[in-house]
Image (cartoon, rainbow, N blue to C red; front, side):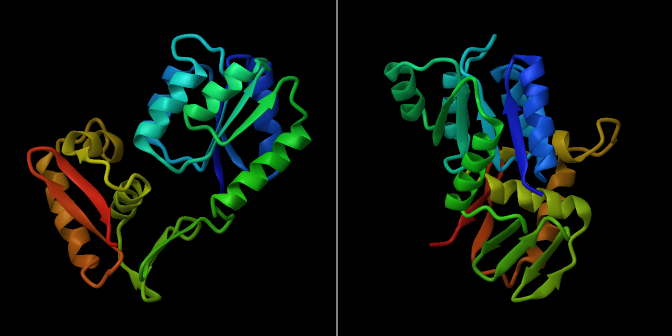
Length: 224
């Protein structure tokens, strides 16, 4: 299922958008300011972001800039009352993909969402394909040359996280905080054990590799 993050400080509008998109088959998550949104994005994978501009703490411009520093490809739609050219220019320069002026027609929003997802090659099957490797998030299965990879749930989620942010380094502590229970007695070296097992299972993969960043953690590097 396509996951959409809705960042809007007007609670009624936020709720309306989430309900509407939910009825259209999307999975939505609500945030009410840019700071909260960035925290949520760090812990979850989304396919598209819909954001207001004028919000407390962190506004839409800063949010878009922060997202683009971490993820160059995720589509971002601004939905705002600011109808002046300078705001539109600043929005597109910060990395957004589309700009809607309030009041927003929800049917138009739905059309824009579908168009952007189509351009971004994100489909409802939720398959990630790199070389001879495929991850199907609906099945929660991975394949190399159509042969199933016997990942555990945690291994699958770690690989998907790394591939969702190629070239971004995740520290052992970051991975522990996201994929292990806070009450776990495991140390950060547990991550090394998991990465070793993952690498063994990906030995026949030709599209990417999981690289150790010494003193920091791990990142996925796509092979040219």
